Length: 521
Image 1 (cartoon, helix red, strand yellow):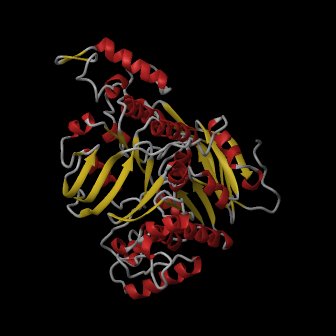
Image 2 (cartoon, one colour; image 1 turned 60 degrees about the horizontal axis):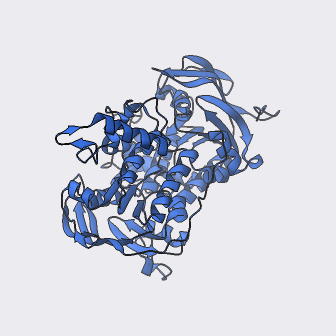
Image 3 (spheres, rainbow, N blue to C red; image 1 turned 120 degrees about the horizontal axis):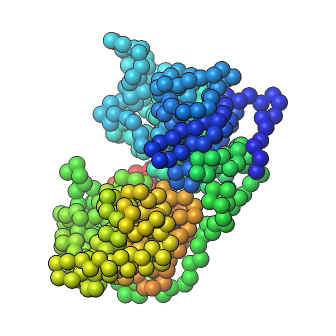
């Protein structure tokens, strides 16, 4: 699709022309053009590594481009720092918030400002912030400490921080990744309120249904270059956008065949565990998974999901409770014993936990069977058999890599995930624990991962799918548990998204619908 010419009378707040940015061995942005109009939400789409965040980091003053020009309200701008970008009215809200937990909302918003310098009457600034919050529908208590706030409220603080500094342009990088459905709805209401008042939003996201809902226009990047510029969202379908991103047709809801659930594989009873800070993160979790079913675990990030996965496979100690796999107790047993019982883990952290980045594809795929014949021969590894095994997995899982001797740190996110899936699935697991298996992947890679999980389900494996992608859980799961602050809020088998959303913010299933029950009922 051709680049859209700005109609007469429409004001371009930002114009980026011919932006080029290189990193060692990579051209992240190659002659990229991007326009942002007054009062619009402009979505920026692309596969992993397409150059979206790099382009916006240039606009936010975090990177300096090697070529191209930026104009703000018609005036050429050269940003050497984020401060210069903010002074020009451009603010960026990152996916990972930059807040001080022990300080109040107001204190966080004032941090880094030149005024006030020595003495401040916080109550006066509380009122100023309350006025801005009211103006844009950003409901948050200025006196509350950050640690007391929900994730959605913390995001509002980040937005308020930029508005207080006078931002007319707000760059939102994957803003819904950590939000519950109700919080996403509130965020979208805020963004609409902002554009109604003349603010402009750049919306970076992998979630095409959200892009279709919130954006006015879309620009698509592919391998650092613009493939479609400033197209009206109303003129395209979700399938059109997916095709523009990956260059082929994409199936959004993969075919899920009927499978009769079999014997109980995983039983978890009253499981309790601590997190890395020494605080209890699992508070009596009980759940079960049977043969031939995918059981989803929904929850906003940071509610004990990672601790649960690590405790189930023996990477974290359980302080109370019982874990049984195929009627054999594995609570606090060594990881290797779990592997022998058929437990397989796809961890959330592909680089630090899921793989050894500096080792080759071959070394990474034999990690579970390096000591078994024919690969393992006594205390040695049969290099020929290991290579043969790795080559077979490379072909079977379509791992795009120059050779099987290539270090996995050089692979894209999608291919790195394929290496992990190849290793874990080839071990023919009886129980698979998949944590955020498609996080950060583009729509094409997501489709491939989801098909692999469903094929394991049809093969009789029991799968616990831990994901923050509600659409993915609804598409793949036979049942869904919801976790909040380390406790199971309830179990849903009918995919009721409204009930799931309420449970994700702390309401127990049995309390939903009862009069007078709040979000923490």
